[in-house]
Image 1: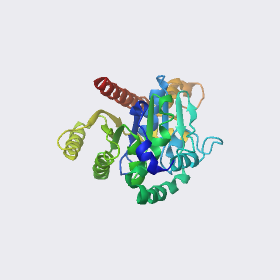
Image 2 (image 1 turned 180 degrees about the horizontal axis):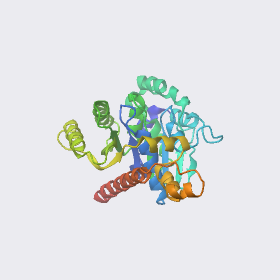
Image 3 (image 1 turned 90 degrees about the vertical axis):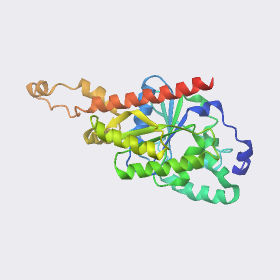
Image 4 (image 1 turned 180 degrees about the vertical axis):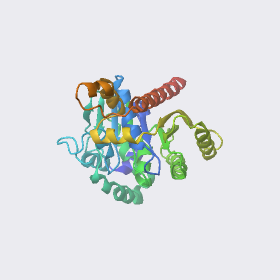
Length: 311
């Protein structure tokens, strides 16, 4: 089956209503961190979650600690093949946490952009249905699928948006993050031509100060202006902690996993008394974990409300 045939034969299943793409044209706004930590929180709550890494940098593998792991980290090879020929190649997901599976990305995905660009010359925008067709057979196996899209690659962002039911746009309060969000909003409108079911789940402010209410209000006004006067800002924000971010990626662990470790480490004075090395986890670990927990709950609530409204 070619992608031309997919344009007429591909059917979006009800299970694909739980596919969420994380996208912003700007790098460094927290896409991967939000994907992995939100997925981890939801999986820890007992839901089956799949993360699809569409980025050739494969930072998902760092967050989840499987970079270079034999039998798992194929650098995106089988993801590329499944998108290239979804009728011949079946996506294989790997369980890296209880209830949390991944389809790895990596350097092999560098060939995706020229592949889709070439297919577009013959098949038009139907070329963007490759990822959707690859995900359709296994979507029913999961309660939620999160796609981590790369920055500054409109071809792969469109590939993700053609597969998704929802889009979340992370942003920072700086000008670059907001410009990237506005560019992604343009891609959102274009993607609806081939995927009319695509909806905006919301915009989430990343790496902010929890008490910076004036800045939050300014960002909300900017977001509202970008979306024609209606602000899709989520109420949850992710606070800034460079120490937690560095500890998490270095250890290949998520914020809530570091929180559990931090709770088990002895108090500073107890470590000194017993001649042990004091714990190294930041005091902000629990707060950052709580932010991701709140975001995960908000995402699930919005999806549940939308599904209830359609029932």
